Amino acid sequence: MKSPDLRIRPTRCPAATVFLMYAVFSCAVSVPDLTAAEEPKTSAEDSVAGDAAAAPQDAEFFERRIRPLLAEHCFECHGEQTQKASLRLDSRSSLLRGGDLGPAVIPGDPDGSLLLQAVRYEDLEMPPAGRLSDTKIRLLTEWIRRGAQWPGKSQGHPSPTREAEEITEEDRRHWAFQPIRSLAPPSDDPAEHPIDAFVNRKLAEAGLVPNAAASARVLIRRVWFGLTGLPPTFDELNQWERRLSVSNGRINADEYAAMLTELLSRPAYGEHWARHWLDVVRYAQTNGYERDGYKPYS
Image (cartoon, rainbow, N blue to C red; front, side):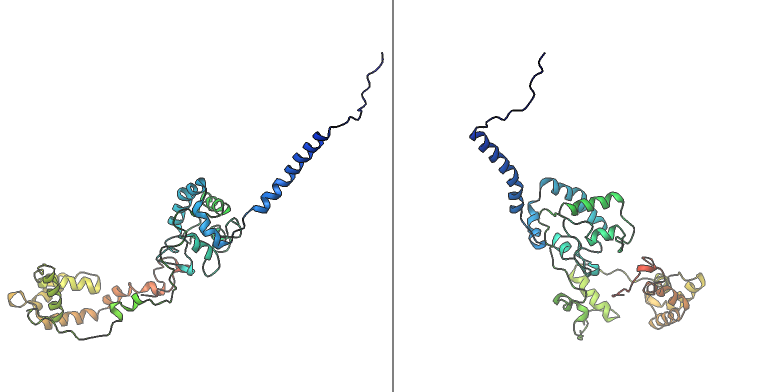
């Protein structure tokens, strides 16, 4: 039996077939190059406006996962009211601008973004109250990897960031910085003290009636708690009630001044009021000694 001839014999390929194969191959090769050539290049500033048209899935991811996370852990120290380290995190423009250490986020580069380095506790440690859960860190990583898009009208923050040492016109208008001027108390008020005359005038303008004068016993307890944080003893209360009381329920002003002088000389006065200031010297450690810093307006 003769075996079949399995040799491949050359055949003629029509010219039209050759041309069609060339066209298909050329398109397959050129399409990626064309796509790469037309891919837009955006700077950090350009991308601020570009995110307003974020993909629906990215917008939902941000609103459901990222915005609540930032609001819970970041806005208190890096929001509209407070910008520690000159850093604000409540808008995309402020994230890209960053603070004292530079931009907080580099879109598309989680590992190069200071925000991720801080929440991972790699060098900086934010938030200082405790490291975020791994799930939340993964969410922030994914958000930055997608381009840190911030959909909607929150691209820029609603009010300008204020520098720490900046003094505004609103600051200058504060009553504490106005020149001292003399004011004559209302002459038609029977109040014993000029301050009471001013208070009574404001109460009258508001249609309010002043409370009745406190009794000596009530006044003594108020002063004791206010200056020492402690109540008077039974004997002290009775003693000063006798000394302060005069006819018609009025208070002896001289004895009242003597009571104040005595309380101001007691150690209890210093102990009570020192507690309001000991945080400045880190006695109570309101935030822990490692970050219980200077209180600028104490």
